Structure formats: C-alpha cells, structure tokens
Amino acid sequence: MFDHAEITVKAGDGGDGIVSFRHEKFVPFGGPDGGDGGDGGDVIILADRSASSLKAFWRKRQFKATSGRKGMGQNKHGKNGESLTLTVPAGTVVSYKAQVGGGSLIADLDQAGQSVVVAKGGKGGWGNARFASSTNQAPQTAEEGTEGKEHSLILELKLIADVGVIGYPNVGKSTLLAAVSAAKPRIASYPFTTLEPVLGVVEVGRLSFVLAEIPGLIEGAHLGKGLGHDFLRHIVRTRVLIHLLDGGSPSPAEDMAQVNTELSLFDSALAQKPQLVAVNKLDLPQVKARQEELRESFVSIGTPVFFVSAVSGEGIPELMAATEKMLQSAPRPEPAKRKKVFRPQPKP
Ligand SMILES: Nc1nc2c(ncn2[C@@H]2O[C@H](COP(=O)(O)OP(=O)(O)O)[C@@H](O)[C@H]2O)c(=O)[nH]1
Ligand SMILES: [Mg+2]
Image (spheres, rainbow, N blue to C red):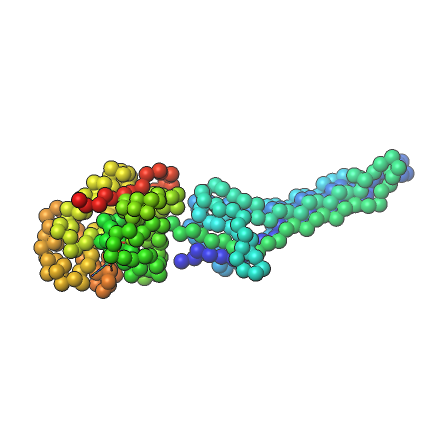
C-alpha cells in the first residue's frame, strides 16, 4: 500500500530586473529601459481523479517549478516561470515536514478538484526603468528577483474503505478485521465495542483492499455518540459488503434477512451493494455440527455462503480471495455525502 510519501518542492525564482538604456540614433542620452524580471512559477498540489495512489512520489521526490527570466532592454518583461502542478488522489493530506519530526498541516484535499499552492514562486525584480524619477533620470539600479520557496512536504493518503463488514453485534466483525489485517479493533463479548471507524489493509497476493467494520446501532447509541463524518465517508465509498453471521445463532439466515431489511430502510444504496455472506465461529463444535444444515438453509434461499472462523482462520483466505474478486467487478460509486447511519436494531 503506497499511502505515504515525502517530497521536496521548490518554486521558481523570480528573474532579475536589468539596467539598460535606450540606444537610438539621434537620441544622445536615451532614458532607462531595463525591464522587470519574470515571476517564478508556483508548485501546486491538486487532488484529481486520475491519481489513485501516492506511488508516483516514491521514485521521484524532488519537484521544481521553472524560474522567471531576466528582464530585457526596451522595457521588455522577462517571461514568467511556469507553475508545476502535482496530482494526488482525493483524500491526500499535505503537511510541512517539521525538522523535529511530525509536521504542520497545509491542506486536507478531501475532494477531487481541490488544490493548494505549496511553494510560492519568487517575484521578478524591477528593471531600472522603474526607478527613473525627476531627480534620477539615469538610475543604475535594478532589483534582483526573490527566491522561490522551498519546502519538505509529507503527503499522506487517508485510507478509504473498499469493503465494509456488517452484521449484528457480537458476530465477530472486529475479530475478523483483526485476523485479516494489522488493524487493532476492540474486541469484546458484549455488543458495545465499536465506535470509531477501524480500517485495515488486507493483502491478497499482490493486491490489497481496505476493510472497515461498520458498527451497529447499539454500539454507538449505548455510548451516546453518533457516527461522524469520517464514518460516512467510508460507508458511502465501500463497494462490497461482507455480511457476517453468528453460526451459533438460532437462525443465521433469518438474521441476514433482518439486517438486510434494516439496511435498506437505512439507505437503499447501501443495501444494493454486493454482499458476500459468511457464517462465523465455525471452530465451535455446535456450529461445526450444524454446518450442513445451515448450508441447506442458505441454498434454499439461493444465497451462496462461506463458513469461516475468525478465531482459527479456517475459511478466511477463501473469503478474502472472493472479496478481492468481487471488488474487481464492483462499480466505484460517485462520492456523495449522506447523513444517515446504518444501525441494526438489537434483537428482542
Ligand atoms: N469461537 C469463536 N468466537 C468468536 C469468533 N469470532 C469472534 N468471536 C467472539 O465473539 C465475540 C464478539 O466478537 P467481536 O469481534 O467483538 O464482534 P463484533 O461485535 O461483531 O465486532 C468475542 O468474544 C469474540 O472473541 C470465532 O470465529 N469463533
Ligand atoms: Mg466490533
């Protein structure tokens, strides 16, 4: 996952103004005509849909805009330097790299089309024509251009979930996330564990995707906290859902139907995302014992089902491979802001 890069950027310097005097036939004392230098180009960072990672900044790390040219005689202005625009994916956070570590935020380029000037070009210097006055008709001074700014920057791509794990509290969503990624969600045998979006990067062969646990209602409501903007960002962008079920429940197939009903009441777009259904806790003997019976119950409603154990790891590689495969064909939704949050109700 290329989600972090450090680069240096240097804006173009301003061109120098020059000292020059008119030389014309029959004009013995021509006036000053030294032109101004051109301005240096800025370095700009732009969030654009054409970029999907920060990989490009791993090989090339130094970027320079062009400098302004010197002024010329006959009051000619030097050419301005060209600005340099670096494109990054939406979701990139740009900060100045601090000498002591860490950094200070410059911009959070959340949406495609947003941009920020990260290094301002130098100003072109004035030519001597500008310094002419009634008392100084032949000025011998011109200004130098100022230097373009130079900065070390840190670019970080905030991860956006591709896949959401849904399901009733306690089915093992957090455990699954911890099992397949380096994420460290809180896991507990009571239903109030998840509150903030916990994301993990799942590697499948050479590919990877970002998995997020989508918490249920009582988790947030119990703690009196809503799920904020961060969460919605992830939920809206997920392209595939893993619907996790507890194999120890009286009827996992019924649980699935109920969560799906709540899902469509909450947000029909979310309910339409493709789902992979997985029955968890296969390591428990009582679940293993009824695996075939459970499989039958899903076959009868036409739902393919995976059997997994987030604890023992059984069936997990197959589930992740199938998820990756489904992602390949799932459409990328347009980013849109939604206000509602998925909140499965506790069972009576
Ligand atoms: N035996 C067994 N227990 C599991 C498995 N996955 C999760 N659990 C347990 O189920 C409880 C709830 O798990 P958690 O991941 O917090 O569920 P969540 O509410 O869906 O996030 C915890 O006690 C887990 O240890 C599994 O595959 N097998
Ligand atoms: Mg959880």
